[in-house]
Image (cartoon, rainbow, N blue to C red; front, side):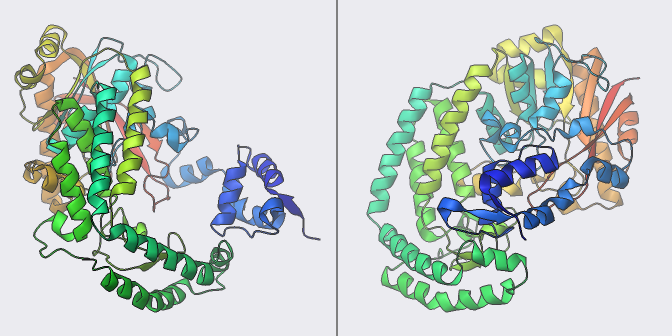
Length: 525
């Protein structure tokens, strides 16, 4: 006979089977998304044990052994940090704003803190030291240094990246931030009330709810999809076309303008008319803020908000294809979904989340110097630029110099770092410096691009050396599949004294394959 388990019993069985904690929420997720079948009512939900065995059997395999077979025995699994949940790898201010290509804070902490183990046999940085990140990105190194009582300076060619990093380590009058958020939210509510959007969305959601309950029942529909009882692509397309006339009629009835009159910029192309108007309204309200620190952090909240409000499907948030202005079958949620017509939901959610994260960070941060400069790390005069924003920090660098570097340089031909935040450049009017990026996507990965990358990284290290102590330690995180870093080190008069090869778990939402990166430890010859 088939064995039935309650949610709690399933949680206990899976925890023992995998030798790790599997919560009742994890089991409920499997039911919700059709991985296993729900049996019984909500009050006495049960699942089949054989389906749990089938689902978890692949996870029973030792991923460490499997990855080492693919990536090599020199893979340092201790640096996978697989024991940390996502909430820990995105803790406090680390998730103030999305950013492609950032490393997790635990990796930075491992090399910056004062512990030693069988892999890290020496302490490289101590409280009061200064660490440099010449490719600051979203500011992860600065934030972790701030936790550890280490001074830090970041450099980034992107003005928006510098804004993100500085916003994370800035000290705020949180009462002022909260007051301004409440003022803007109240004004936005009044602005929205003057349009037809609220009534339109209420009616649309009502129609979608009826339609989804009828044709995409939860969790039965997803269960059938997982077992190929329904051709999702064909069925989804059919139902998408069936609902379209209902949607079109509502758009007409409430006079909703789906597209803007022009598509000259990112903001023109990727946002509906109503959302664009709300964005501009909130932006104008932010300009009224007198406190510069408050203005910056609320600008970050708006930027995070509008990133989530682009006219795209839920499945394509990370990679944009074409603007979506109609209801659509959503493969991610297994039902009909709609485009966004207002920023209010995300604005309120991110505002609340930002305040909570700033409060958390304020409790653990140390009283140290932290600044991200906007500039080209190949030739920037760190002291001269720092004097303009923090003379005391500039004096400290001149007095004791920088102990070392912890950074993740861009990968050759992988990401356009300006383009990922194109909406923010449009909105805030920052000058783009795409031509100064090292190894951008648009230059590709050919011979010329690699030579340019090697030269760029070499120049960055040679420029940084002027500000480093004599016995410096440099840690660079990279996937060096083209074996460029030995040449880079040689060009900078350095040697690679050690390499740490670490597995990168779940590096993107759609890529779960075996992947590794190397932390190169460089010192002076």
